[in-house]
Length: 197
Image 1 (cartoon, one colour):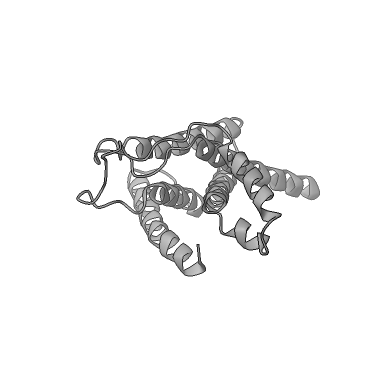
Image 2 (image 1 turned 135 degrees about the vertical axis):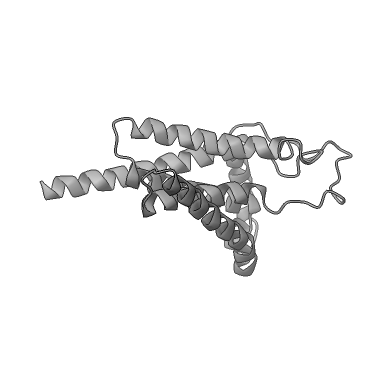
């Protein structure tokens, strides 16, 4: 995926995410809830993640459901098999870096992990309660499973079949990314507290 393709893919989801996050924050403020920039960032990143997992929506008139739609990939850590195949083939190519960087499977895994890490980091910045790790894990599971089930069900039946792939690895990378971002911010916060005391 070229930089232009990446921006064309991420741009609409980022804009929709920011607008949705701002809208939810405004509604929460109108209801009397305290919402600051850190809350709005978590909301915006979460909404962007959800839009990215569905975007682009297909044209129902051209969606081919004759084979039942896109089949789910239920094998856990199938991405590891892909990495092992890339490792094998990279020994026989003149440009192994292009092979690795051109892998759409690795690009998707890295993007999922990075965006979810950002969500986890944003969440950690505003939830410092005793059970914040449990709440972060719950958010990670709900967001990731919600996105994957939406893909599996064809937007909960709005489309006659799935057009995106439900992947067990996506659940693993999404939840792992969110908890990694959360843990990193928590560690940095503890280090800052220790230096100040």
